[in-house]
Length: 450
Ligand code: SF4
Ligand code: SF4
Image 1 (cartoon, rainbow, N blue to C red):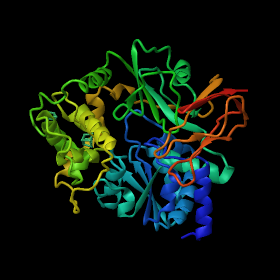
Image 2: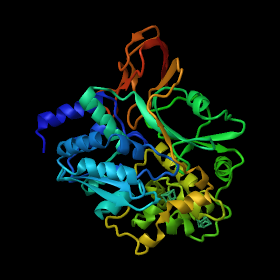
Image 3: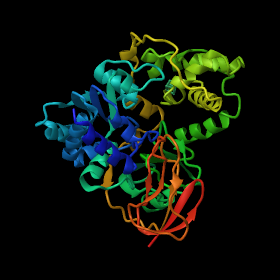
Image 4: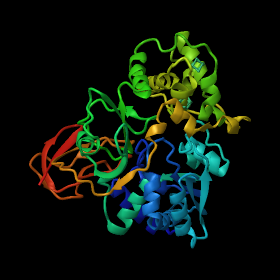
């Protein structure tokens, strides 16, 4: 274990560099590092189909990643670092294995190609055999989980003093060649699509941010890339999955529960139910169909949903939307300031969990995505002509940033332009370029590159 002074120094650097979990909801990384844990798990599962960020970074930056993980192991006082990688990412496995050979307390755990292998709670169970309680976090069972790109960002700040100003993501789908690029936070999505999207447009294509299964529809292609952007998936509007997403949005405003036949298939395949958590999506559908009041305790179980989408995009043959219902219930409960609380104390995984784990190839086939699974080009310095950057003030879990600049201010590359009170949960925001601030409001700062 590292001494307290050195630990605090690293935590401060990571906070001030604006690092948040890449690809997830943007949880500030410094908070994870402030904890003490038995294990540090590096999440290289990359379980959303069509994405190729973490696997590429593990190939290119294996030494840097292993070295930084070994240091962070000391920061959290862990006895071991475990790189969790899908077996099928052979090249990444080889590189990490080679890089970790000289470290006695760094090892690999190879994962099967199932979905959602990268869900933190599924990962912890697969690797450590421990069940994170419902409404809990991996730390409850002695683990800190960190994504590969986040780890690389920590490396850049600790070795080169570089704050987080760029993100890596994969553009894939109905384009001739998928590409993983490193792009400045604040770049309009439209500019990336213009360069790598082969002339696609909103009229004929749907764009998902995140991944094909857990992604969100991009309503406005001028929206900027944020710290957590991990994937952009292009789908023809006539494709099966694009139509499902379009209908999901319509369904949520209609009665999404009226034709549930209570077959329970959604529950039988739910990864959180299989871990022994109280969630049973079919029961939520029935409760909603019966018009039960949101005060009914059954609705509290929706808060244990990780929104993996298996229930609505794979399990339900009636094309119903248990996930969307859960999302809606979670929002309702959050508005009432009802926090997720465990409903039981002891958890045991389902006896048939192993048999019910969903091979990724099956969900890809069901969603007609298999044809897009191809080798992915890696471009670390894309030739983008971006002049104007839109930096959103809310890109992490916690308190949104408050602007520290005003229109007309000249700023340097990497300068802090917005920050969060030191007592609150959050991290600062940095400019990816040297330029002039042209606009500031409660949601964003716009910078014109000079
Ligand atoms: S999205 Fe559906 S399958 Fe996934 S955790 Fe939530 S209820 Fe379970
Ligand atoms: S799979 Fe569909 S039809 Fe079956 S219980 Fe779940 S929501 Fe209802």
